[in-house]
Length: 285
Image (cartoon, rainbow, N blue to C red; front, side, top):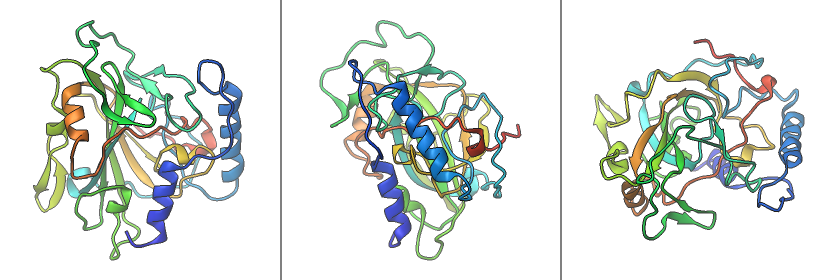
């Protein structure tokens, strides 16, 4: 995308703001997270920001009255990007276990699958999966996958910049969201197959997204990522978050990270859960 909008998106997804102190276990303090939330409230107050994401999908309360038309159903939009976050950005459904405050920059925080896994499912695998300077993906980890859709006429590609083009700089955006738990089990779902895409009825689609993980919770929100811990996201997004997790084979997650159409090779960090009701929409369902 050849506009400043792409720069905003990319910077917001990789940047973090402020200085945070870590405790002995590597997590920043509760006070540090509270300070980030205070900065977010201060930086958005009276500025006209719309509702933000991520949120607790089990809580329908919200006081942000800035409204926008919901995006069409994803089957009428173009899939433009697929990426994933280590630990769920959203809370609710089967992913309510808090991972901790993390490093203050979006890593080692978020929410995890609250159910139990077998010893076999948790068995370590050889080598590192989807490794980066922030760590890798291990058996038992929770990941939140974002299937991003746009009303712009685009091809699927790398970064959220793929969701815009010069002909449509203000498309409607929708994120179909599925939380997975990564397991050491060859019979679990194939991550590469889950992310296969093709053109269907004139639009690009992820053709194998799960359809048995509960009725999605739809709400009005924004783009996410730890770069927005202290700043409001200006982008309007319709979210559909499935409340149940699905199990995915860790070997196939590693294979996807080794090469895909989205240039994704590691897990992204998470934005702090938005709890300020002034920054949340009311869920209508």
